Image (cartoon, rainbow, N blue to C red; front, side, top):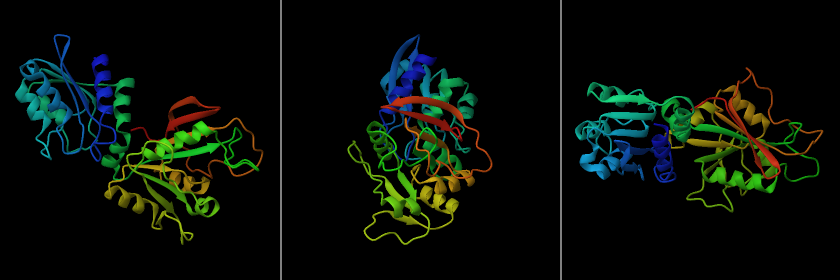
Length: 316
């Protein structure tokens, strides 16, 4: 099972950047141990991964096993239900990477009612399938963007180094621009706006589109600022952004804004670039956080001379 679902995850990635607001989905049809059809969701409004794979397989779909990264849809949208297509094609079994977070979607139930065996992945492979669409999942389930707090800090947890412009190295800063390019919106607080006049755009990297660039807090914005000021209650602002189609928000603000997001329970993931420097003074990477946040899935990776720590507050 794992090798075919791995392949489906790889196929799904081909749609990144073109399926919004839809999720990434990949599918692999297997019969008698051989792949007879593959597909992925290429663009919003286009055919779903399951139907692409079924079309590729043709009559070989009968009695085959479908490995698909996300639970097949069971409702009528821009396209007919994938569950109906699978039943009509005579598929014998469906292996699902992740369940749909929308409670109104019950593709698994529909398939089982039709006599199709269904298996849902668990463990690391199931997590990878959920992670692939982490922003979309939060947007659907919680009605707000998936929030990633990104911060560069010294080894002693400071977010500034005396007489230095940057905390992190060049490689880390380039990765931040890639993160911006992959996000629907990027945000800071008014303290950061007044101190640094950040642009928040993605520069020096391939970007199909620029993110929305936001400032949370009390205005006014400085003259010439191109940021979008958001002055309302945090949860209301996030709900409005979600209504506007913003699924992912990269939070780059200072410790005060980060603490406010933590207090509201809306930080989902942490990215901490730890530089091989001891500042000895200056603000810490977070203000007071209450209650304490228990992190999961902690990983560490070298980015140039820095160490990137990644962890989840809320797993997808």
